[in-house]
Image (cartoon, rainbow, N blue to C red; front, top):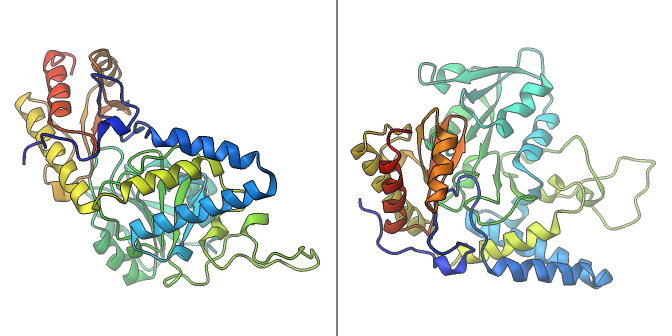
Length: 371
């Protein structure tokens, strides 16, 4: 598969400087220009008293509708949290852990998914690896399986249907972080009991808000252990002589005001993305990733990303002790990639095309000794 000659998204719709090959979506995507107006609308609504607050809440509902449509789920199953870490932490805190319980994660899992349980110390943590497949770590005392749909470290994509079957075999909760997948491919959200996605990467939003999905059909009795005014049900003045009820939908994840400014931006981003078939976006991306993998191979650079596009996301990664220097040197050439944890991550999206792929490969060829 060759890299597409033209972008799927119009690069002129994004804040991408002239001559820049923007290949770091796995860290931050460029801002859509339409977001300038979204933030301006937020500023106007925030300044408009009670009517402005109603407008802000309407934008929250608009974002929920768009997110639900993208993931093929009911609007009531969609809520918002400030970050994936917050959402997973609320979930970990809500589980009635018992002595001897365990939870299973990949040994290279992203901190937002595994750290909440490790810090809480509520259950034994078991780590799966190539030598210890997840199926060998799960047993009758496994209460939770936590996984990233696509790995931040090497862009490897997991088989969520197989994990759903594994979780069902022992009655475990399946928690999925779609951050490195949402916006790049079709999302089968219903496979998870709970799922989250940060919005500032391929969803084209910004920090401050993340999508939270509660599969109410699978886990109808779930309730967080903490609450705030926004997550309570009803509109009457609360009475504090009894425990108040929670909202019936996934907005019970949102204890206080959602981050309205980032929500305005997210709604515009989701509106932009709905103009493109997710399968077409994935096909376009895989044209770029397979061309990148082939180019790295020609340069003698070994990628840690699985070669088969059925098993990877929208990034191509390789390890290097000089990752920081490589990233900086490429940026000097107008090629933006991402450095971190001893590896270089090259990430593509709908605005990427063959010229961008050629630019990063040409840069790496000149810097081959540094690799």
